[in-house]
Image 1 (cartoon, rainbow, N blue to C red):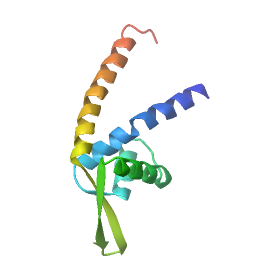
Image 2: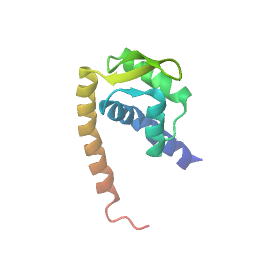
Image 3: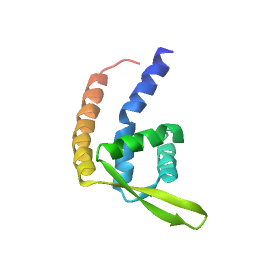
Image 4: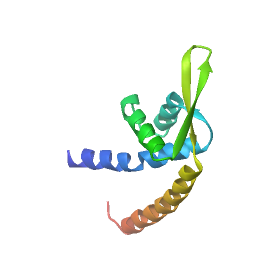
Length: 111
Protein backbone atom coordinates (compact mmCIF):
# COMPACT_ATOMS: atom_id res chain seq x y z
CA UNK A 1 0.00 0.00 0.00
CA UNK A 2 2.79 2.43 0.87
CA UNK A 3 4.65 1.69 -2.38
CA UNK A 4 1.53 2.26 -4.49
CA UNK A 5 0.85 5.59 -2.79
CA UNK A 6 4.43 6.74 -3.35
CA UNK A 7 4.29 5.65 -7.00
CA UNK A 8 1.07 7.59 -7.50
CA UNK A 9 2.51 10.73 -5.88
CA UNK A 10 5.67 10.49 -8.01
CA UNK A 11 3.60 10.25 -11.21
CA UNK A 12 1.36 13.15 -10.19
CA UNK A 13 4.43 15.24 -9.47
CA UNK A 14 5.77 14.96 -13.00
CA UNK A 15 2.48 14.97 -14.90
CA UNK A 16 2.29 18.74 -15.49
CA UNK A 17 5.92 18.73 -16.64
CA UNK A 18 5.19 15.93 -19.12
CA UNK A 19 2.05 17.67 -20.39
CA UNK A 20 3.93 20.92 -20.98
CA UNK A 21 6.67 18.97 -22.77
CA UNK A 22 4.16 17.25 -25.05
CA UNK A 23 2.34 20.49 -25.89
CA UNK A 24 5.65 22.29 -26.52
CA UNK A 25 6.10 20.10 -29.64
CA UNK A 26 3.16 21.82 -31.31
CA UNK A 27 -0.56 22.38 -31.23
CA UNK A 28 -2.38 19.29 -29.94
CA UNK A 29 -5.84 17.97 -29.12
CA UNK A 30 -6.57 16.60 -25.63
CA UNK A 31 -7.15 13.02 -26.85
CA UNK A 32 -3.73 13.09 -28.49
CA UNK A 33 -2.17 14.26 -25.21
CA UNK A 34 -3.74 11.26 -23.49
CA UNK A 35 -2.34 9.01 -26.22
CA UNK A 36 1.16 10.42 -25.70
CA UNK A 37 0.91 9.97 -21.94
CA UNK A 38 -0.27 6.38 -22.37
CA UNK A 39 2.61 5.71 -24.75
CA UNK A 40 4.94 6.97 -22.00
CA UNK A 41 3.11 4.68 -19.53
CA UNK A 42 1.72 7.65 -17.59
CA UNK A 43 -1.84 6.43 -17.83
CA UNK A 44 -4.24 9.34 -17.50
CA UNK A 45 -7.99 9.61 -17.94
CA UNK A 46 -9.88 12.62 -19.23
CA UNK A 47 -11.11 13.39 -15.72
CA UNK A 48 -7.51 13.92 -14.67
CA UNK A 49 -6.27 15.69 -17.79
CA UNK A 50 -8.91 18.40 -18.24
CA UNK A 51 -8.53 19.95 -14.77
CA UNK A 52 -4.74 20.04 -15.30
CA UNK A 53 -5.13 21.69 -18.70
CA UNK A 54 -7.52 24.24 -17.20
CA UNK A 55 -5.10 25.02 -14.37
CA UNK A 56 -2.17 25.40 -16.79
CA UNK A 57 -4.29 27.67 -18.99
CA UNK A 58 -5.47 29.77 -16.02
CA UNK A 59 -1.83 30.17 -14.96
CA UNK A 60 -0.98 31.53 -18.41
CA UNK A 61 1.13 28.53 -19.47
CA UNK A 62 -1.24 27.30 -22.19
CA UNK A 63 -3.72 28.76 -24.61
CA UNK A 64 -6.18 27.06 -26.93
CA UNK A 65 -8.04 27.59 -30.16
CA UNK A 66 -11.23 26.01 -31.41
CA UNK A 67 -11.03 24.22 -34.75
CA UNK A 68 -13.76 22.65 -36.82
CA UNK A 69 -13.73 18.87 -36.98
CA UNK A 70 -14.78 16.76 -39.95
CA UNK A 71 -16.09 14.12 -37.55
CA UNK A 72 -18.14 16.05 -35.02
CA UNK A 73 -18.20 19.26 -33.01
CA UNK A 74 -15.33 21.76 -32.98
CA UNK A 75 -12.24 20.69 -31.03
CA UNK A 76 -10.08 22.59 -28.58
CA UNK A 77 -6.38 22.54 -29.56
CA UNK A 78 -3.79 23.52 -26.98
CA UNK A 79 -0.59 25.52 -27.49
CA UNK A 80 2.14 26.44 -25.05
CA UNK A 81 2.57 30.17 -24.36
CA UNK A 82 5.85 32.07 -24.03
CA UNK A 83 5.39 31.97 -20.27
CA UNK A 84 4.77 28.23 -20.51
CA UNK A 85 8.04 27.79 -22.43
CA UNK A 86 9.89 29.73 -19.73
CA UNK A 87 8.38 27.54 -17.01
CA UNK A 88 9.18 24.41 -19.04
CA UNK A 89 12.79 25.54 -19.35
CA UNK A 90 13.04 25.93 -15.56
CA UNK A 91 11.41 22.53 -15.08
CA UNK A 92 13.96 20.99 -17.46
CA UNK A 93 16.72 22.20 -15.13
CA UNK A 94 14.87 20.90 -12.07
CA UNK A 95 14.32 17.53 -13.74
CA UNK A 96 18.03 17.15 -14.51
CA UNK A 97 18.87 18.04 -10.91
CA UNK A 98 16.37 15.46 -9.62
CA UNK A 99 17.66 12.74 -11.95
CA UNK A 100 21.21 13.44 -10.73
CA UNK A 101 20.11 13.37 -7.09
CA UNK A 102 18.21 10.09 -7.45
CA UNK A 103 20.93 8.39 -9.48
CA UNK A 104 23.56 9.55 -6.99
CA UNK A 105 21.56 8.29 -4.04
CA UNK A 106 21.17 4.87 -5.71
CA UNK A 107 24.91 4.38 -6.26
CA UNK A 108 26.31 1.41 -4.38
CA UNK A 109 22.90 0.15 -3.33
CA UNK A 110 22.69 -3.61 -2.85
CA UNK A 111 19.47 -5.05 -4.26
